[in-house]
Image (cartoon, rainbow over all chains, first blue to last red):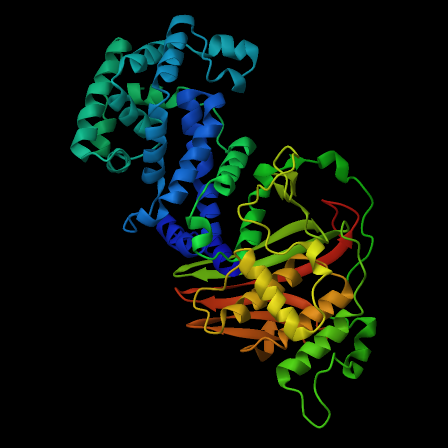
Length: 201
Length: 331
């Protein structure tokens, strides 16, 4: 009922509690959408651009809604679950994603960010680093790219990325290590003394 | 700056937020899909209605320029002041109730008084804008939250508005974000204003009809309903109507009288809500209750509050309500 839903939403009940509530009170799933849809949308836009994002975000939450009875209640935070769903969906757009990285690497103009910058900015915004990063991203194996971007753009921890992808955390570390090496090489080994991985480990 | 920092900054200009189209697609897909889960578990429309408020800013179109209109048209009777017709309350002869010689039950007595007071309320058109400020106080487990919300809606609740990030957003029920007709609400409308005029006049039949409306609309009953399904559903539908609509006075009166006819409903007395003496109607739950609170003097609707299984309790109080000239206009 209204109080129960609103109180749960307003008092910051854990995602798992909201999902639990939504099993009996489906409209409570709105709370989950409200909390996470904006972040999921931004993640998809960064990977695929604005045109594809709306459909994928909608599909992600529709799938999540349908699968909510299978949600592991031990996981208080639903982000890994949602990012896992959207990552699977992004997989079917892999060619389009890579095509845009290549366009950025080749022209220096990013088709993904163009709608969010003015024309002058768009023409100059993608600096050399972005071109090199885009070239590296285009060349990564899909699983490595998924892992890397879940951490870099999805703000997931290694453990959360592992949960999202359904792989052991050791696999995440391994993929990230290789992907980061690839990025460093693309950037000309500008800063080989990265410590972020160790810090998160 | 290492490669991860550079990567994190790449495409950082992409804004945070969900687009209205994505939300529209989600809702539409949910409604149009052959989703066996949706009707499988009865939902409670009240939750849908209130939860939806938070969506409207995302869905809506900014009408900032349109709200420079004149201010209040009519102010609804304030809580501390009895409506003019209230004096007639004690003389109200409800429809065939309280046979002579038999004292009316406390719940029927309260229902009659509230109904009499309701008859003195302003008559409004369905498109009349209403301003409400609600105060929420809630507790779920160890979490507590208090807050207030301003909401504008038409009397028939077909259009609602609220401010989000400083912009007034309008939500049109039954239309998608760009105004095209179609059901895009998360769940089907529970109680349509248009259907209210055809409700039966007899309280018992009205309760039954309200329960049917609630059941057909996935309104369902609260978790832990310890009464009959129809009792819980009718109680929630009435709570929804009183909190979200401004109904014609006669219809409001009938709703109160119907409360007196719902099996299991009792009276709660001497309740202090937001510093004002109140009374109310309560329907018990297993491990909790839901209460519809009205002012002890004016008999106007004040709040819905409850305690629910799972350690969730809270109240939503209508701190201020007035008829206004348009969305965004404060009394």
